[in-house]
Image: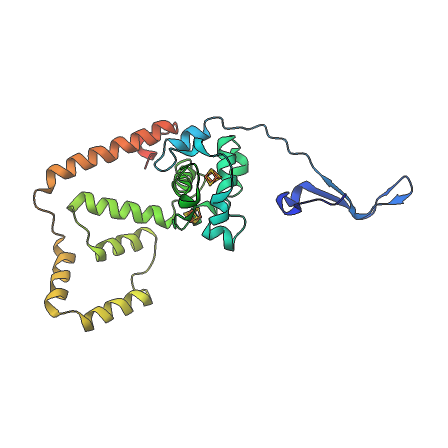
Length: 248
Ligand code: SF4
Ligand code: SF4
């Protein structure tokens, strides 16, 4: 009997024999394809709660597996292995090991939110993808992604000064991710700006780079925001059973 949707079966679970004769009938090759039964013993019963505790994952419990998110997904259109519906199913049923097989592609969500608009249950699948990528990092299953480094750089700058200074953000981001500053696109951008922007504007930008001005009266707001961020980190860490320093 042919195997329908063979692509959905892990290759290592398909067993064939180059040469096999049963009761005098040659069933070699694909005629004797067997599917190894899947045995799962390591459920993580807390996985849905852990992901629901992270920002974006709150409504995962609403999913009824219609598949509209995957059907609408920008990344799925170019990589069928990128499957939000399936990952939500794995999370809700606690199949951690199965989810970890795809750990290196979950971060590829481009936040287009097409899934969010297609979802009939307001699950907010884009948020679930973000929470899942975050969960993978916090649990140590994946290294911090460039997006996480950028978030950390951006947040630290806002907390420190109450304002956004693009060149500082870029320099910090490149430093954190080990990238050189003299990237061709950046050189072209700065050169173009130097040619087109008025001199006083460029001088103002240069001064902002050197002196990093703060928003007036920022100290009080900074204290409140830093408290909020550390409380949120502690809450994330507690939900995942981690040390509070790990709950970024
Ligand atoms: S937001 Fe992410 S998961 Fe949703 S459709 Fe876009 S790429 Fe796919
Ligand atoms: S569209 Fe919504 S309800 Fe349907 S599978 Fe995706 S997340 Fe679940």
